[in-house]
Every structure is written in C-alpha cells, then in structure tokens.
Amino acid sequence: MSINPTAIAVPQPSTTRGISTHLSLDALNQRLAYCNGKSIIIRPIDFNSNQPVIVFNKHLFTTTAVKFSPSGYYIASGDESGNVKIWDVSPTTNTIFDQPIIKSEFQIISGPIKSIAWDNDSQRIIAVGDGKEKFGHAFSWDTGNSIGDIQGHSSSINSVDIKLQRPIRAATVSDDYAMIFYTGPPFKFDKSLRGNHSNIIRDVKFSPNGEYLVSVGSDRIICLYNGKTGEFIKKNENSHDGGIFAVSWTTDSEYFITASADNTLKKWSINGENVKTIKVSETISPLNQQVGLALAKDFIISLSVNGSLNYFNYDGELVKIVSGHQSSITKIEINNNKLISGDSNGKLYEWEIKDEKLNSIPILKGEHKNYISDILTIGYITYTIGWDDVLKSWKNNELIQSITLNAQPKQIISYEDKLIILFESKIELYSNDLKLLTDYKFPFSSTNIALLNNSLLITNNSQNTIEEFKIVENEITFTKSFPKMRSPPTLIRVSPNMEYFAVGDSTGKYTLYNQNGDVITTRWAFHTSKIFDAKWAKDSKYLISGGLDDGLFLYSVDKPSKVVKFPLAHSGTGISGIEWIGDNKFITSGLDGTIRTWELA
Image (tube, rainbow, N blue to C red; front, top):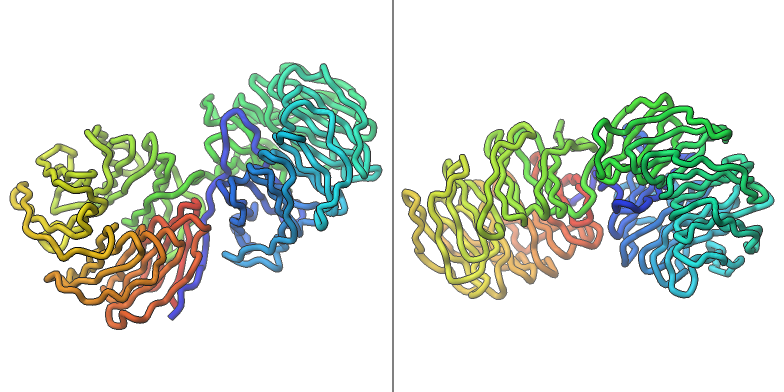
C-alpha cells in the first residue's frame, strides 16, 4: 500500500493594502505566478487545463517578487531577505507536488526584493527592492556576475522593466517620485526623470514593441515616455479616483490597462484617451482595491486586496472570480459533500466534493475576526469558534447566531443534541441554539477532548495523562485518570466502532487503547514532532496522521509495527487537518495554505 498525491488546491496571492502586488504571466504556456507566504504558486490560467499546479517552497523567508523568463522555462523569485532564486518551471519537467530544480541563487540586496525583470534572451536579470547599501542589482542568471549598476534612486525601488528589443533599455521607479532610464548591457545610468510624478511611483512597463514606456503611481498620474530614449512625452492627471498600483500593455502595443485603489480597471490608448472603464465591484471597499494585473490571451486578470483574482474578457465583462485562502489553513471539516475550511485570518470557505474530487474554487462562507480554532458540522448546521472568542452557527452560508465566549476556545464537539466547548482549563456545555447549560473547571491545562461511548476524554497537559468524565443530565463529574504518558498528549481520536482510541503526544508518538482503557500498542511512533490531526478510516482498521513534521503516516491496528508514509506532504509548515472523502481517498490541509487530495493504492 502507498500514499499517492492526486490533486492540489492552492492559496491566493498574499496582498497588503496600499502596496502593489506584481503578478507574473507566462504568455507562451498561459500560466500565472504569484507569491504566498514563503511559497511561489504557479497555476494554469485555464482551470480545465491538465497543466500541473506548482508550489515552490524553498525560500526560507517570505516571498516578495516573482517573474517568468520570456522563454517560460525559468522563474526568478525573491524574498524579504534579498535572496533571489532561479529555478526550472518547464511544463514538461514538473508534475504535481514536484519541487522544481534550483539552477542558481544569489544574495542581491540586504532587504526585500520588490520587482524582477528578465531580458529577451532569458540571460540577464535586474532585481530591485529596499536594500541598505543599494536598491537594485543587474546580474547574469547563471553566474551571478554583475552586468551594470542600478543607480540614481534615493529610496526603495518599487518596479523594474527591461525592453525586450535591441538596443536593450531598462527603467526603474521608486518611492522618491523618480523614473530612472538605463542603457545597456552592461546597464548604465542614462537619465533621471523627476517632477512628472508627485507621489510614490508603483509600476513601470515597456510596450511589447518597445516604442513606449508607461509609469503609474499613488498620485493617480499616468506618464508616457519614449521607449528607446526615455524622453518624457505626456501625462494624464487624475486618471483614477484612487492611487494606481499596476499597469500592463495589450499585445498590439496600442493600449494599456491600469489597476487602481478606486476598485476599477481602465483601458487607455497611447494618446491618453480612456477607452473603457471596468468596475470590479459595485461595492466600493478597501478589500476591492486593485493591486495587481496581468493580461492573458483571453482574460484581463486583476488582483483585489482580499486575494480574489478577477477574470474579465476584453469586452470588460466579468467571467469569474477565483477566491480562496490567503493564509495558513487551520481547520477543515466535511459534511454533506462539502468541505469547510478555516484559516488564520478568520476566513471560512466551502468547497464542493463531487465524485470524490474537490472543486478548485471555493465560495466564501463567512468569517471570524481572526484565527479559526475549530469547525463542527451537525446536519446542515455548521458551528465555528475562533480566537475572537466567538461561537457562531451557519446554515446555507448564512450566519444564524453568534455569541461571545468568556475565554479563548480550543475545540468544539457534539454530545447528543448539545455542544461541548473546550477552553484552557474548563469545558462548557451548550444547547444547539447556543444557550449555556453548565460548565466544569479543572485544575490542569488541556488541548483536546473526545467522546468515547458515554464518557468524555480530556487531555491533561499538566500531568501528561488522560482524564475521564461522565455527563449525566447536564452534570459533569470526574471518574478516573489514565496512566501517565511519556510526554504531553496533544489529541485523542476515537475509532468509528468505539473499540479503540489513539492518543498522540507532543513528540509525535501514539498510544493506542481499547475501549476499556487497556494499552494495545505504543509502536505508532514515526512522527518526529507534534501531531496536529488524525482521522480513522471507516472500518476502524487504519489511522491517517499528520503533524508539524509534514509527514503523512498510515497506521494499522492489525499490524502496528508497519506504517505507510509520505514525508514532506506539505510545504515545510505542518499538516493542520485531515478528512476522508472515500474508502481510499482523503484530503489534507496545511499551514502552507494548500489543500491536497490523496489516494491509497
């Protein structure tokens, strides 16, 4: 038996209000690349495509910039430490879950990389950002040898672009309100154009034919320059009702499109005429600010602050909105052919499961103010708790009820027609309409609870044991303690047939008990660190487990010394949730923001 990956649902781009997010387009293979956390995500623009989704996670720091080479075979990605990695993204060499091969990597500056540009030969790179000694560097992708100086700015450089025709030219824009024009290679300072912008310049792009250069900024100004000489031609003031964050040219070099904080995209001709205005949403909201832009073959793709990728056709009609998590997924729950996922930002999304497959685009179900602690579904009602100390109930993606709790909740489970919520040192019993029935305080700290027949099992992290309680007519009473374990227990999982329960601890080891509390085995000890989640198979013969070490382990009751494993199942951050979606298929969620589907074969 083996564990095989079958599909992956990736997170949305990381965004920050008021800061441009550069999307990168592979025009030849119609793929989109963007940053999320410490990962770089590459996804096909066509969601019906068989092209693999790539999650590159070999950066040690948060990624801040990404750029396809013109050939489409390589990507250069940068992070907040100033490190740039060049890696292979050829569609023929990468398959699902494969980690691309790093060709070279260099420490470019001493701060965040904000933008990267390749030359037409896919040989030379300019990377810019916010360094302490310099703000940019031009180098060869394979050797790292310097091929010029990026000088002339007095503040952080926000964007760079290279003209793809000879003679090669480059341009950078900065927080210092200036656009610097370079000749090369080797790249040399040619001229500084100041006074055209009156605020931070966010983006700069050469037209595909190299004839023109356009810059946009927070001052709502669009400036047009000669692409060969860098000479200023004209500018449009008050082009939007908000700052402009991104600009991109159409392939015929006749028009360019701008993305703004006023929730709109605008199409412009070279003579400065506004040809078309596209409203991203009728609701004017900071979350609908447009901070990224890419022009694909069939779509105009814009990025909202809330992480949504908005697909428009070239007539300006909205085709679809691709939304999803932007941060670590903390909990998942399955019920009624739906997967509900919650993340560290408080967002709740619902995914449809059809024919044991997860759809790639979820819908927003609701949200808490921050970290989702747990999710529970009973019938068609979903209950959620979060670090905002709130308990909420949902039905059909509508909020039914919300109550404030008096402490930070850790877990929620069902008991008959009631709810039990675990806190640090107490449990509370609620009716299904969220009325408090009783509570019970205990003299130890706890992280997990489970029901075994009519007993309530609670982890005692202070004494490294499991405590058993009874609930009779809303009265909670202590019954017994289990023998002391090797280290603090982190979770309890009871088998569907109620014959076994497995207790995982902070070192990654399990103790398997029968329903009477007798130890069956302690051989389930293959994790190397804390266990986050585990789920029993329907036949109660197997337990699939995941944790901080990123490993997936399938344990057998009949053969406790045997284990089926898949190391590094997620991107170096931990597996936060596991759910079965069939007899031999299951889903995992990770702190890398991805949801992955697996099959036992």
